[in-house]
Image (cartoon, rainbow, N blue to C red; front, side, top):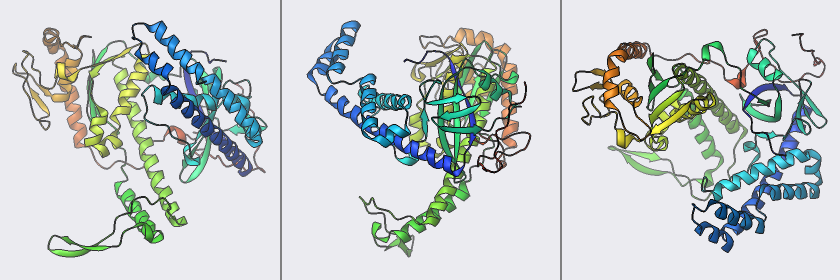
Length: 511
């Protein structure tokens, strides 16, 4: 049964899990992982046979203008090699029935969902959207979802139900976002686990039908917004406001802590695996002769990791997870601030991948690509648009009001226009992007006529950015909480470890 194509949003709740329930969930995830890998392997085998067949090669030669004939030829080639979602689902049923323990642990609806997930992964390769597929190891397989909310993995009476397994969630009844999700229709349910501070925590995600709860402060306005995306900040200019906002403001980097843990991990790795490294050697460091550590030998796959090394690795993962969660929380504020000024967005077509090659650590810390994709998703969901124009045709950072193009260095952050206008480079580029049409042509006449009315809040945005830059210092640790670390306002704590003696099912308050 195909899922209805309606708008959806996610409501996430932590689950209370004891040791027995944790072991049962892990065994079910292990069965689901093995079934997924089997389906993925079969899908890749059939995909390779299809791609190398004469029927598929003949279908590729058909002109794209002959759309119906081309689609029919591809469909016949797929039928010949049984490469479709339904065929992979049938294969998953055969595998689960032959392996009795998989059939007992994973229900039929979940089997079909896993088969569809494997088929879509293989389909990305044949469409050229991916180079290869990844078979899941236990640490990389973190979620399983159902197909409907009628059987299998489902949500019933404010509880997570999977067969005979029933788990109680932690519900904050004072949170309007959670209440909105609980009162909305549930399309299907997903269960997942995360590692928080070295411990496994289980969550349930309700995929609800409709639109998410919108806070009063996070409204979306009609209007055009011009953007100028950079590595560490983003400039925007709307109809009645402008701003130059930094990415991941006030987020702790944990740089010293992570480096110390990395050194500790490397020392432990060398001590436990001496055969995997070349011998130390003497080398020159300036005028001195020093002993340098031997490099890792190529082709070594067997590594011995001590318990102490695994503990240090967990600490490092926790710091990196915490840093990423804080950065995402702060960047969401940037996205909401921009959407308050308009939902029809225009921006340059920049290459985030090109930035990653040159500014890898900065991109990882600031995540400008995530901000761009989140803006696009939220603007289109609100009925707006997200248009990217060519940087080569417009060259906004070089363009002056009279039409001249004068190159300037990247270090020059102030645009001094030949007409006498002086403005921050990023804010001026964001202003000009508002007047780029769908043909990637910049209307300088409209930009010049509208600039006197826009200049006051451009200057105000520049002043606010300069004042904020002066106040920049070390950010406070644990300044904000990620969605995975929600806690009750009433008790100020979130307990996910079940105590069988004290655990009791609490009735929901009357609303």
